[in-house]
Image (tube, rainbow, N blue to C red; front, side):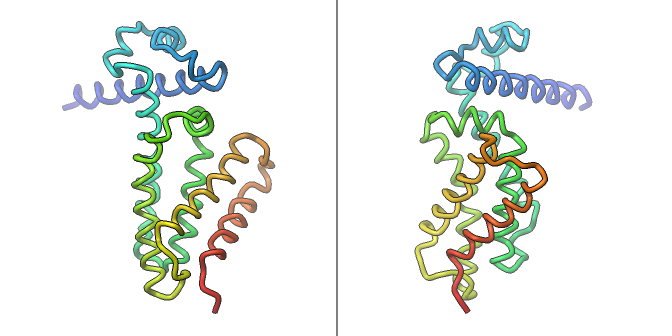
Length: 198
């Protein structure tokens, strides 16, 4: 059992090195310059080892995006959002989403800011979308949110939140001392846009 765990940990470490190297190449040189050989050289492994993990560079991009969305979903689920009032759950969920993405800026810049394979992003985004849809539906039933299609509200929220993430990750909005304030205000403002006035 210990050997299996050690091998699994080694596989995770190698995959993370591959993700990091791929992201760096995309950011520094562009997606077209990514190759298995270049990734292997960057992490000082043989191309054969990389091929044991991925058939082609597109598979690496898919894996990075999928891994990001899986981990952000796990982070959001760990907050037990279904036990909170919908407006609080929505605020906490969106703030968690922002924090996760800005804590992984290289992966985010490489995969989300370079116009790569939007169908992969959409497919993986569905888990986050489903979490938001559940909160929004509950909120509408409890009189918190406007009577609008849940999918439209969720899309609006994700698009708006992506804007602030882009600004932070691109360093156009990055005063460390005010970062938390900016995130909280941005989330509060977009939630206010979908909340029923009382």
